[in-house]
Amino acid sequence: MDRHEEITDMVCQHYGITLEEIKSESRLQRLVKPRHIAIYLIRCYTPMTMEEISTAFDLKHHTSVSHACKRAMTFTPDELVRRCHTLLNHYAHKRMITQSEEIEQSISDMLEIMGRVSNQINAVANGDARLLKRACAIMKSKNQLAERLA
Image 1 (tube, rainbow, N blue to C red):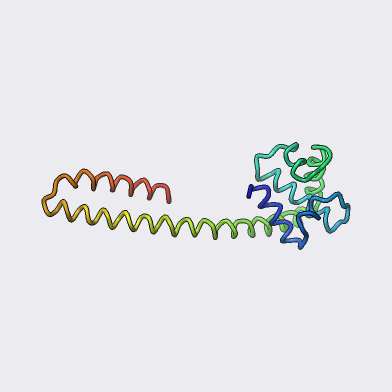
Image 2 (cartoon, rainbow, N blue to C red):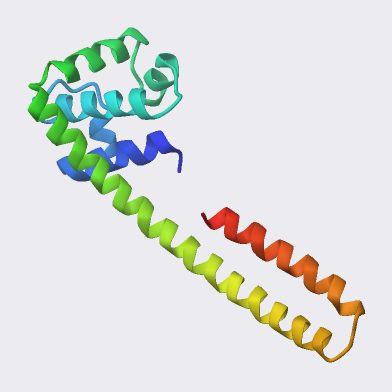
């Protein structure tokens, strides 16, 4: 799922509307405000052009995106900040769950590498010099993994 789809889905969930409703041509206020906020967030937080956003929302012209962003900014600043903050917190929480699973896997990988390093060091301590080179290579990969996690 692309980032703009995640943002649109998040807005739909928050406002209790469907994806079809947010992309419809309906001018009902219960659909217009969420649509404008979704377009505004996509414009701010993705590298998509106005043409790409207009295509994603089945809009007739890319200037509709510009209009939606302007309308979203006409909400009172408190209202816009509150709405965007709530939506972005939801999005961040969703991303944190995914990232925590990735971190758990990385920790598991690191523990496995550390176990191999320990075995290699014990073998070297017992006089097997050819494994010293391998232990150094494993330590280097462990350091690279730790840098990736940082």
